[in-house]
Image (cartoon, rainbow, N blue to C red):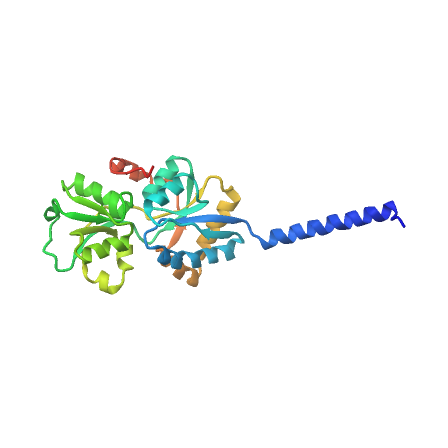
Length: 283
């Protein structure tokens, strides 16, 4: 027995409708996903503990999916963002300037409550009380291009204070502080926010010897391939998180204490500080 043409048409239409419904259901089940890179100021586990809760709240507010895409070392992070590997990224201000100049990323948000500045620490009780005493000494830094902790710090120590020292690069801010505490370096570069986040037995046994000039802190950036509606949606969600008490606590761990919109002009002054002479290209 053969089916009538009209029955075949009805079956085909039913199949098409089912396929469309399944496709629609699949689309709802799998939200649009984006990578989110974070400069590795801390070890990977600590970074994940800070940023994964932030990304989960960002997902809830936008309906997008975000996966944390990190690098173990700052030079690797630099290579990744300069290749445009990240859809969104939290990066240091000089990285932001480079990304803006390369027409790759646009700033979305930054902290309005504080400024970023580098601190040079020595062990508490150290006889070193003047910068001149660091002539020829071993100084620890996270990496050559960590802005406040190394790039700006080395620029000022050499150009403004005439120091000649032996730099050692130890990957993270936390490692810098431990190297100083254990006597493996005579002094080390960090930033105040990471110093304050150290365990008391580390933080309370270090002394700040010097601080650099200040700059607007790390921005959250969006790659230029991200559409304007998506960028605006993510920016609105980030700013809305600043209005929610629980979300503010999550952001404060980054640390972003008072989130607000970031602009290109926020980072333009860095171009006049002569940092390019001390910047080391990762590739």
